[in-house]
Image (tube, rainbow over all chains, first blue to last red; front, side, top):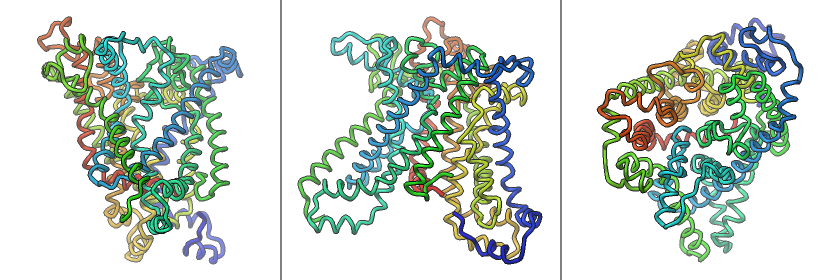
Amino acid sequence: MMTKTKTETLQLNVHKVTLRTKLSRNRTLILMCLPAIVFFIIFNYIPMPGAYIAFTDFNYNKGIFGSRFVGFKNFEFLFNSGKLWQLTRNTILYNLAFIFLGNALQIIIALMLNSILSKSFRKVSQTLLFLPYFISAVLVGFMVYALFNYDYGFINGLLKNMGKEPISFYSKPGVWPVIIIVANLWQSTGYGSIVYFAALCGIDQSLIEAARIDGANGAQVIRYILLPSLKSTAIILILFSLGGIMKGNFGLFYNIVGTANANLQPMTDIIELYVYRTLINQFNFPYSTAAGLYQSIFGFIIVNIANAVVRKIDPEYALF
Amino acid sequence: MKHQDSSMVVIKTISYIFIGLFAIFCLIPFLMMVSGSFSSEEVIITKGLWILPRQFSTEAYKLAFASPKLLLGSYALTITLTVCGTSLGLFLISMTGYALQRRDFFLRNKISFFIYFTTLFSGGLAPTYLWMSKYLHLKDNYLAVFLPLLMSPWLIFLMKNFIKSIPFEITESGKIDGAGDFRIFVSLILPTLKPALATVGLFLALSYWNEWYNAMLYLSNKSYYPLQYFLYRIINMANYLKQSTAGAQVTVGNLPSNTLKMATAVLATGPIVFLYPFVQKYFISGMTIGAVKG
């Protein structure tokens, strides 16, 4: 990262370059970054101190700093009601499933695409695998509804055709983790497999040929050359996804289960849904902010741990 | 390959079958939607959805276009947002990306971290919502949808990685000719960035076209909504469905609401799906380069 360029070495030689000369020399470059800096200040940095709402009994008219300070009361409520535990458990378990099943499937798909020699078959199937990535969460939610609803759903249509009783999926909380996980895999696997596929394409072909000459069969090539070559990519990708384990895919959950079906909540509620619901439906700023801040801080700690682990494995890949 | 060993044959066969099945699995919900939208309402209610149209009917589309004011307005709005957002976003992102990869720019690491930090920590939804609505007065303003999608740290770093692969000599030659940094960026760097602009542009266009979240948060009293939020309202709000067909010669009881919803879904998604095969090439190569962290 810190390779000294010619100009920088030069600057070191010419005694001390004052900050002012540096600024004026880079004036245009600073100006070029300015829109981005202003953008992130307005949309990301300014709201940050607003997290203080979590420690108040916020009143919309009095504003953030006019409201009464209540310490950790809002967090205590979330904790004591058991809600925080349920949300944390669901968020983490869903993410673990998304990450591990997702990466496993992506690797399998990439290996299989790699062993398919017909270019046209590969191209068509890749296009189809990508298709779900291009649609909005709204449509994903609607598709899930069209598949599973009681009245005219695709699945229930099939069941009726086979002379079986239709199933009321929307009153069975237990099936939703499976549906949500499958929906997530459906939408992201094709897209996610590109990185692995690219890594496979980057393998030195002479390595594979040499193994073949030594008598290795197809399965052995996969086992001893292709899979090991994906190992570092997989570890890094998984670690970074684990860094985001507290963040949920709001769009997917919101459009698939919504906020109204309390029956499904024990199995489907994630932190983002709670933050949204308490804010927009109940207009409860303090609880919403408290849950959001809890997520942010917990997530911040985890991403730092993940980054430290990545740094240990390969400093090149560390994010910061 | 000269000798085909038996394990290779098995692996290939399994690969063709599995990939083929997975591709069909990806396709089925789409087939179901399109077929549903071309079926008659009665057959859907009595027999359920299928992957081929049953009792072929274009009634839902006729109804969607019977009084198309809301639909066409949403189209116009979404196209405007997508075109303006993608072009302005591309310009700002590539300009920032260029400055941030210049190794003679002494603030580059500091500014990079300043941008990156926003992905590590955030104030959360409630403070952002309060700031946007109470202080910036962006409630029911299309800017609330337009602005937040313009840039993202990940797109800026993706672009920065792309530009890094362009030899620094190009910048140096511009400097020797006496061009300023902005001039160098516009006339020397931008023209070499086509694949990068295509990739990042596709991501931007996708996020604008598929935008519904900010619209849901901030727009409630508008005549027109971004398409995906329009679709959301058609699907989830019975009143809005009726309102969207106001003026058409249908009595409310006979409204083929299910097929109409599916026809709206097809209309709202069609353009971006048809665009995809044309940009797939750039997208895959772009993702491959972007995957390399810098």
